[in-house]
Length: 200
Image 1 (cartoon, rainbow, N blue to C red):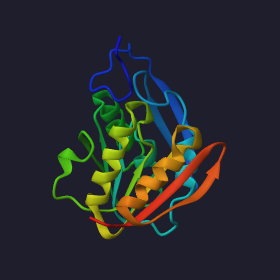
Image 2 (cartoon, rainbow, N blue to C red; image 1 turned 90 degrees about the horizontal axis):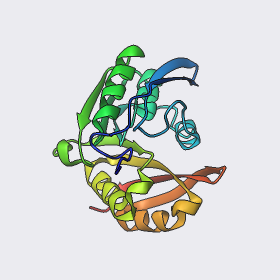
Image 3 (cartoon, rainbow, N blue to C red; image 1 turned 45 degrees about the vertical axis):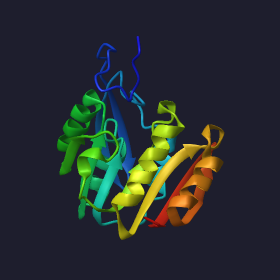
Image 4 (tube, rainbow, N blue to C red; image 1 turned 30 degrees about the horizontal axis):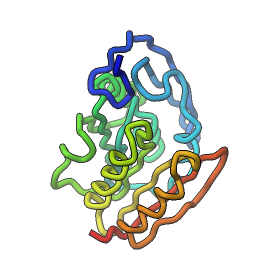
């Protein structure tokens, strides 16, 4: 069975599991499921990425490859002045992200999109992603390139990637797309990268 969390229609039988998480003093409850990344828990990479969000976050924020909405819903709850967009290719993930946003009182736009294909003409102050590493380097590097083109002039891309899954080469690639690209945190093998000043 060729079934991945980046499949459009996962073949895995549904196995719902709840996940509770607290972010910046806000209690959140998520519904997760099989066939979607990190069933039943907020993964450590996403936790570290959320920890490194700027305290004054506002504006248009894209959760790229949102899964069940861990990043986008958390940010929308903690920063109600943001305008959240969540995208994924996985239709089960998108339905979960819609339900999780509504259940947590977060207004968010949820869209099916392969990368930023469905967001032509949109511009964002921040793009956050826990990229689908198993989809392969060509896929995730395309996502980063598309993100650079979709950021506003002062916008930034934030992402998490494991060191052993290519964090160093990823940082080198980001430096070909952005005027500034740096590691801003690391913990447990995860690197948090921030890139700004798109060269496109």
